[in-house]
Image (cartoon, rainbow, N blue to C red; front, side, top):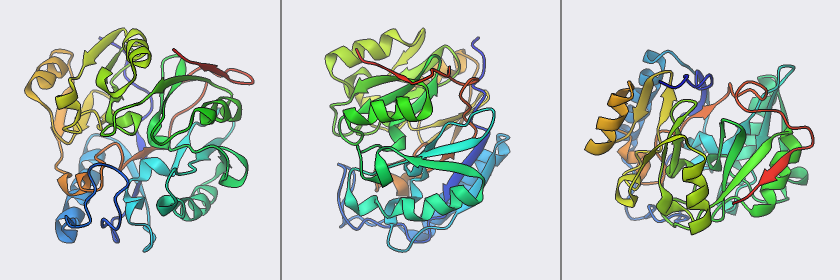
Amino acid sequence: MGQQLQWGRRYLMVEPNHFRVDYAINPYMDVHDQPDHVRAREQWLDLVDAIRAAGAEVEVLDQRPDAPDMVYAMNLGLVVNTAERERVMLSHMRYAERRMETLTAAPWFEQAGFATSYVGRDGVGAHFEAGDAFAWRDSLVVGYGPRTEHLGLKHLAVGLDVRVRGLRIDHPGMYHLDLAFCPLDDTRAMVCPSAFDEESAAAALAMVPEPLVLTEEEALTFCANSIVIGRTILMPTCPDRVRVQLEEWGFEIVLVDVTEFHKGGGSIRCMTNPLDVVAGRDLPEVRGGAVVLP
């Protein structure tokens, strides 16, 4: 059995007071299929309760009225703390419809004691969305293509003093890495090769000692868009084959219905931003940074 992930015990979430579908920037969004506000709020509260029941903390940020996608808190920024300070690399969203979210997130992080920075100068450099990044094993694993730009990998490596391992995404339905990849412990991860180009698919499988390989059909249920708290996995859905393997590995699966949020193209991981990732503990510090590509 692998060692548990040490991060994932403290999350930032955004209260869904203004969640709706005003535009279509991913294949799941349809302005004619609006979320039910009452049901969405109930599902959000159920997720908060499930996270706390699993032993993690939740901090809450108010949603901007003009930012309907802000409920997907993972994309506000990437927290990679050091032993000396808490810090966040704020996202520079690919689509202008979401860029105002960081105008509200930045002061929250600053008031909470985080040092803030951007990919690029003043948030106008390379596009980077934090749903594309995971601290795991020897690297910050970053998906690029649909949302995060290739140039963003270098900014992340240099800005955070870490090794960035880039994987090129070319599947429109898995436009963020967290729709195709989910680390489970220090040796296991769910990974969907169909999300990547041929070289990156091979690299993704090679970097995971014990992969749970998802089919395209399985990944499109949002099952990889889950969070792991110790040996508990909070999942929006779990295909039977996936459940058998996860339980064989000793994980407890807790299903949380967040289907209203699927209408915006995100699920549990998208709605939760871990605030407790630490460089030097959860991934090596590499002075000056480094970028590794397939």
